[in-house]
Structure formats: structure tokens, C-alpha cells
Length: 197
Ligand SMILES: [Zn+2]
Image: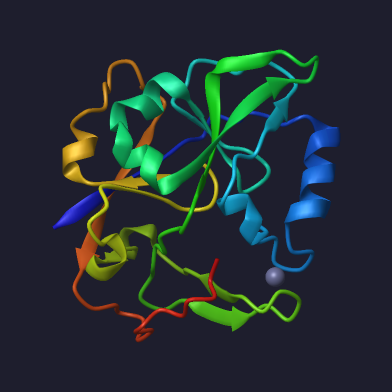
């Protein structure tokens, strides 16, 4: 069994002043992890320009950015798992074709031999997957019953059922990779600590 990891190389630059203010108010100064309240309510993101035609956008904070038309193809499976917010141009105009998103509980993409430690500032369990991306995987338990998951940033993990809804012709810039789903983790971390997000 496998799922699909969707990511992007298309960058959307957030407004510099917004980015600096957001980072100092909402990210751990040591590890960069998001403040928990960002997962429970919408985050409004300010950008300098209307982004190009792409499904997902790489950004400078862990807040995901994507095109509403694309995200909508996943329906409620997406809405249930994310806090969804607005994207605004620096002059104040809302960009209705764009949305920000943060997973309420991010999924952990694992490697066989990660580096793990506890952040001495915020106390969270940090997991740095190492090595060849061909060896990355997720555990069956971490998927639960959900069809769609988020990592921090603009990457998504979706089941085959949702993957088939993607119009690959329209969303050519998506970077898509299969991720194996394993019954038991290869890194020996079981159960996974709760203080990772
Ligand atoms: Zn931290």
C-alpha cells in the first residue's frame, strides 16, 4: 500500500514585513515550529504579488499556500484536516483564488534512521528524517481514517482515492511521489511522541 506525497517548487514570496512579524510572534526561536494556536484558527497571509498558476506554493513560513480551485478537488477530506485562511495582497485586496492552510495535526513522514531531539526552548520532539527520499514512508497508524494529511509547509499526503481526483493536465507543476505505508516504523519510535507539533 502507498499514498501520494504532493509538493511544489513554485515559490510564493510572502510580504517581508508580514513574514518577520509572523515569525517572531508564532514560531519557536530555536526550532521554528508553529505556535499551537496557529493550528486552531485561520492564519491570514500577506503576499506582494498575485502568484502564478500553480496548485501549491512553497513559502518561507510553515503556513501552506495553495490555489482554492485545486484544494477544492479534495472536498471535505481537506476541510476537516486543516485550518484554512485567507491570502491578502499587501495593498489590502483579498486574493480569493488563494488560501492558506495549516494541518491541525501534521503527519510525520519518516525515514529509517532519523535524527531526533527535544527542542530546549519549546520542548517539542523534533524528527529530522535523513538520507534517501526513496526510503521515506508513513505508518498506517498515522493515516488513521483520513484521506488527506498535511505536513508543515505546503505539502500534502493523500490516498489513491483523492489522488485520482487531481487534474494532472491543469496542475503540471505539482511534484508527486509515492510514499510506502508501513505497518511498523523502521526507526524504532513506537508510539510516536505526542509533543511533536
Ligand atoms: Zn522549539
